[in-house]
Image (cartoon, rainbow, N blue to C red; front, side, top):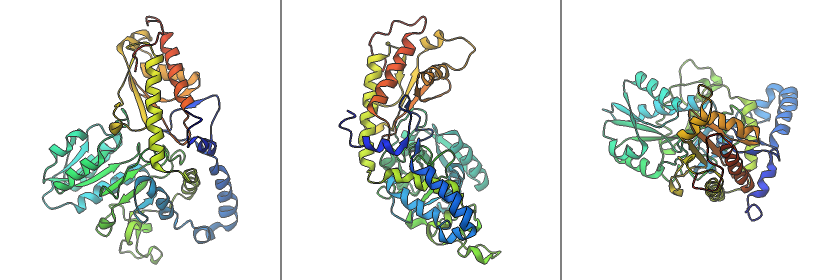
Length: 412
């Protein structure tokens, strides 16, 4: 399978250990080889020699839009619709408050994905308090039935961070628009792993991080997408000097810039931005459709191997087998039988299992208390990585006391 993989050569664009199966790219992507040299040049020459001149001569000032245009094709957006800067949390705040300000009169509520990453819910509730609206949690599959003419917008995760389930972006967006509401999508666990189609599906606003499948590095800046037809109506709740129409006029009155630039706030984080720009070179010549095809093949194969190697009944997949409902990770729930096999009062069972996997060279992560997560980044994950991870998982679980011998079964 690796020999016939057209994306296999891309693995060489990353710094990886031959003795480790790294399956945690859904939390932190691997280091692209282009980054260290680029950052060394930024520090030594652009900052060290050119200093302030680099804002113009090295293109620092235009980096947020330039790098946004590099991300745009990966999420199905045209140039001029994505700006990079600030954290995911800050961009969620901009998108939610900005969306509420564009909503129709009489709106009283914000819908929030009931399974959302906690920060999204925290920020939505804070934004609701500031704007006088209420927050109503709704399961993503129920949004089409629950949206009303009183709904200003819905904030939805494209992929569930805990289970890896892919939510139906086109259908949910259409249902929201049919009721007169806006669609705000969190793409943290989908951008760089599968096609998103923001423009094609008329998404209003979207945010996402860049340190997972986009491999931008720890804490690399996030991005904000605003649909072109909404940009002149978008009113950011954080009107910083960088989003002013004439930032160097130092005008005490605020006039927003045209287009996506009004999504900026303050001075860009240049070192992180330019590390991200270099990281995105790993995508040269790669189509997101090819990435999606490999992602599905990898996760199919991993589930097949789990079924073959893990003793029956010890884990079950929370990630849907249906390709239309699957992101690029596999989440396995540990059974109560496993909990009984571990010391009581110690770390969560999933944490103990993952610690042992990492000790044996298989790096994933877990979510409290019983979910093992394995992220598959098609740019560098091999089929051998997938096989090894399942095999080592079977060895770890099959060796536990009070667990049946590790014969092949239906563990997956």
